[in-house]
Amino acid sequence: MELPPRLKQAVDQMLEHHSLDELSRASARLTSRYRSELRDGQFHINDAISAKAYIAARLPATFAAVRAALSMVEEAHADFVPKTMLDFGAGPGTALWAASDCWPGLEQAVMVEASPTIRAVGQSLSEGLSTVACDWRAGDVLKNSTDLAPADLVTLAYVLDEIEARDIAPVVARLWSLTLDTIVIVEPGTSAGWRRILDARRVLIDAGAHVVAPCPHAQNCPIVAPDWCHFARRVARSRLHRLVKQGDVPWEDEKYIFIAASRKPARTPAARVLAPPKTSSGMARLKLCRADGSAGEVVISRRDGDMFREARRADWGDSLGGPATESQGDDA
Ligand SMILES: C[S@@+](CC[C@H](N)C(=O)[O-])C[C@H]1O[C@@H](n2cnc3c(N)ncnc32)[C@H](O)[C@@H]1O
Image 1 (cartoon, rainbow, N blue to C red):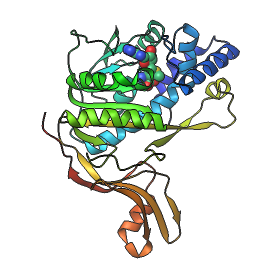
Image 2: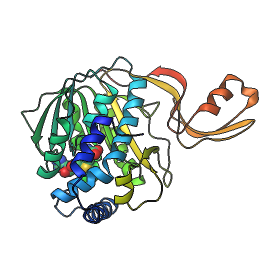
Image 3: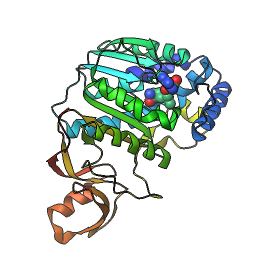
Image 4: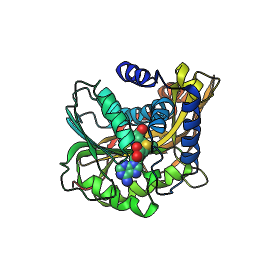
């Protein structure tokens, strides 16, 4: 996956006069802070160079993850056409670009971000998105804000890992109260990211939300640690991206996990593929999460006919069997 051309052009322009060494060092610092999930009272993106390093090295991957999550939402919730959006921990506006790519009819977005440096970068990049009226605000996702109007789509991407575990439930509950239709929460596809998504999922289901994606059911997650649920999206690396990350290959695989839930029932599929399928000429071995709340590996052979043909084409993250059920939950 690549960034939308207008975003890529705006990013390239913003980075053109920066020293590669400086960007590489700032990118390595950011990576080490993210990997260790350091919480030292400072924002990870706390100066101009770390903001530039983020858009050079992380934005392509977080965009790919959010966009992939939104595609699964779109598939399960075909009637959903958001006009308004609220994004928290907006950073450089990743979720805004992904949402307007998925739903070109998006009209208005309120972007809440605590760090002034990345907010300024995001605001400047979003000037290239002429179809959406964007309102960038300084704000803390941990605090109650009375001046935010609910929106059709509420997003929180790669933010839960920057807040304390005890804050997850109240933050998710508050964001749900601002959601007119659908909320999407994305995290890195690590086991810790999955556990945070499980906490968010529980809060949403207890509040009466209908699960939209990726789970094909609203029962307890059947995955048992040390295993964890996550997906991956291949991200094209530009020359600068590769140089900043000192990588050799022109791509990277971004692992992510998310939960999307709605006030309206969604058409969840019969099953979701939870790992890269293993296929041979007469057989497909798939790890599935199923609508009945179970998960496990299934072997489908040529004798299974249409099911085999569908399984052979399936990829990690795909839905199988078409929409099976309207998701469970109370209309809130
Ligand atoms: C990893 S970045 C993700 C940015 C963007 N959502 C994305 O997916 O690329 C996390 C962002 O959340 C912001 N953030 C962290 N804690 C926050 C808080 N309490 N309130 C608002 N924003 C916060 C950070 O400043 C940073 O811009």
